Length: 193
Ligand SMILES: [Zn+2]
Image 1 (tube, rainbow, N blue to C red):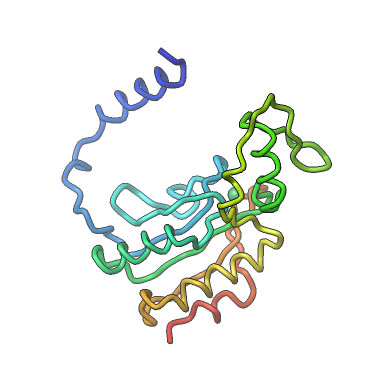
Image 2: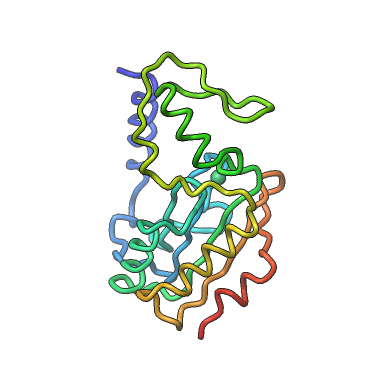
C-alpha cells in the first residue's frame, strides 16, 4: 500500500472513532454561509474562519476563483441549502500568481511531469511527450491578487443566478500571519443590492 494511503486510512480510523454526535448533523450548513477559497495546503478554512463540521460550505479550487464550477456550487449552496452570505478568500504567495495561460500551456505541451519553480518562474524538466490539450483550458491565473478578488466578487455579484440580497465579502488571507485582510472596494463590489 502507498504510505500516503496508509496514513490517510489510519487517520480516518481515529477520526471516526471519536465521531459521536456529528453523525446527526443536518445537511444544510448550520451557520448559513459559504466560503470560496484556494486549495493551497497552507490554508485551513475550518481553522482560519472558526468552522466545525456542519457549519458552512467551503468551495475550493486553484486560486479560489469564481469559475463556472465554483458558481455552480454557490448557487446550489443558497438555492437548495439556504446559505445567505458568501466569502471569496484568496491569499498571499498564491501559486496562481506565478504563471499565465501561455506558461502552463507551454509546460504541458513539453511534458506531463511536475515542472520546477525557479527564480525565473516555472521551468519544464520532464521527458515528453506533453499534450496540447491545455490550449483549450482557461487556467484563471492571478496577475494581481487584489484585482482577482474584486473580479471574483463582481462576477458572483453580477451572475444572473445569484440573488442580489446575498452579501459577498472579499478577503486575502496572509500566509505569513494567518490574518484575513479585506480587499479595498470588495465590500462595495459585493454589497447586496
Ligand atoms: Zn493559492
